[in-house]
Image (cartoon, rainbow, N blue to C red):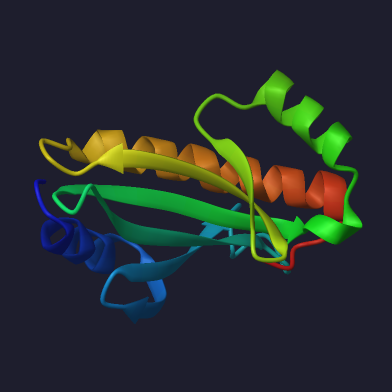
Length: 136
C-alpha cells in the first residue's frame, strides 16, 4: 500500500462508506451483533489524505466523540491518558475527535486496520462515557 489511491480502493472494498470526496472518505464502523442488538452502536470515522511538505503522503484517521463545549475536557484528557494507546485528542471545529496519522509510503495494511479499529472503538467508548449517547 503506497498511495492514497491504493488505500482508498481498499477502504471502499472493506468498509461501509457513507460519503467520499477526493481526499476524504467517511465510513461507518459498527459494534456488536446487529442481529442480536436492536440498537447497535456505530461510529463515524474519517479517513483523510494529508500531504506533508508538499511531497509526503500521510493518512489521518479521525473520529468525532462529541461537542467540545459540552464536556469536561480535563476529565476527558485524564481518561484518554489512562486508557488510550493509539490516538491523540484534538478539537476540530466544534468537536472533540480522536485521531491518528500514518505515512502512506510502505504502509502495511495492518498498520492501518488495527489503529482504525482501536481508534473507532475508543471513540465510541468515550462518546458513551462522556456524552452519554451514540451521536456519531
